[in-house]
Length: 213
Image 1: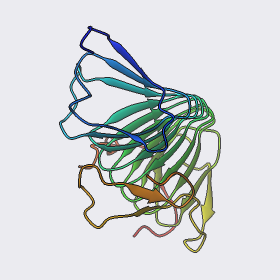
Image 2: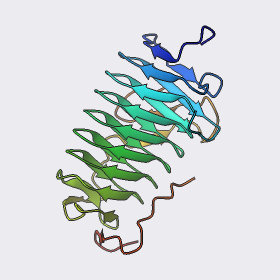
Image 3: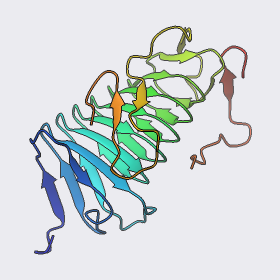
């Protein structure tokens, strides 16, 4: 970056994940995470139009916190917490937790929990539970629990699952202080290392799955 580079490519093969914070996420650059890199990204300051653009591709695995936005392609795997945003295409896999937000399309797979918001397109496969808001535009049936509200033109295209069915990739906390910078969280199925204003517009068609709680 000292030489004026506008694109930074990360190919990090070390055993320990690489940590990126506001200090490394300078305005006006693109960070591209490739290969089998493992990265933890924490942005504490709100993003602007000039904020660094972060892209993960190949088989990269990322955990993002704070106000981070990440674009995921290829077979990238993303665990999103806090109020982060993920825009995923190709065959990317996303775990959305807390108040995170995801726009997922093509052949992606998404597991959504807590108060996450998901907009699905293309052949995206979505598995949602808790208080997730799902805006479903995909012809692929979404797997949801009773009590969830589903919006969008594909709101009838769902499969119901019981709450007793174990969640494949349910995240769990490793530390009790949820917002501490540098902390790590575990995923049962993989690598261990402010709500969104997306309410439907007036008269937006909705469909409620079972008794709403």
